[in-house]
Length: 352
Image (cartoon, rainbow, N blue to C red; front, side, top):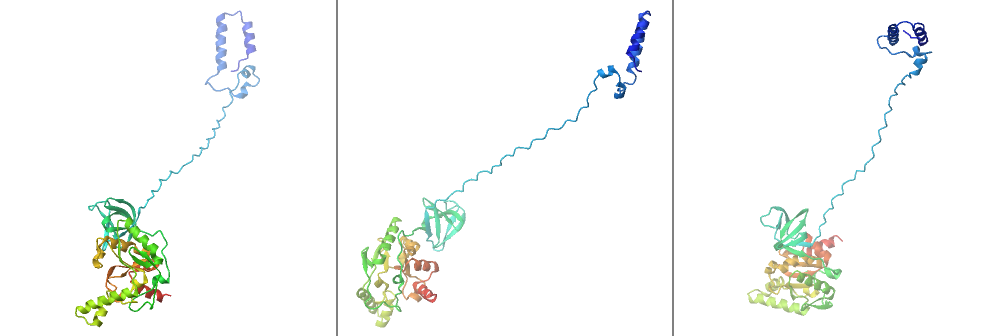
């Protein structure tokens, strides 16, 4: 029901004489009609031309909210952790095993400690540190402890080792020195040596002494006359024992070489013992002096000339005190291969 406000006002005026209750009743009735039933919403079309309706603004539809854009996450730098510094090992030097076969490498500096490896005889290990009677060593990827009783410090000479064909001259019963052979000599430790090896001889003795090893030189260069005198003396000693001269000369030559077949005439030989062990016999091989030479002499160009198992080649008995200079290249090669000088020279000449 639509209410005409103007007609309603005229109606009130014409009937103002009527009682107030009628007016009030009519007003209530008309207002109820205007509200309608069911509470429905008034359509936009029903308000056209109705000033009263125009006074009530129609609520604008609420627009769907545009979501705020999600901000891109600020990239964070993923820093790799700083790697732990790799520990560096400061080596104290090198040592050579002097055991007969090998020495055990133990986990700790204790004879009851677990065995974690072995250091073979004659092999060189890097020494990290010395601790009382033990050496902390590294060998073939194993790091542990070795008793110092089975080690000798390894040295490398700080001077150049001389070299030349003169150093590898082979002298034996079938390779004689020429008659009238001479060599320029220099005094050394109470004897004489080829002047070309003087500095290296001095360096070897000094380096051994720095390790607490005292050498005593008992023989070096011998002249032809001296060599002949010593040989004849040895021959006569065998004749005195009942040998024939021929037998005595053969026997004597295995100990004291005939003149011109002796390396001592070259000035390249040192007969070395110690102040406390002066005998030239196989017992010298048990001394610390021999162990030092066996571990280091090749680096100074010296080789143990007459080995125990090489007499068929050398024709000379085992002489651990007799050290011959041949140059570092040959000495190191023989140390590694186990060859005697005859074998080495024979193989070298074949490969030329």
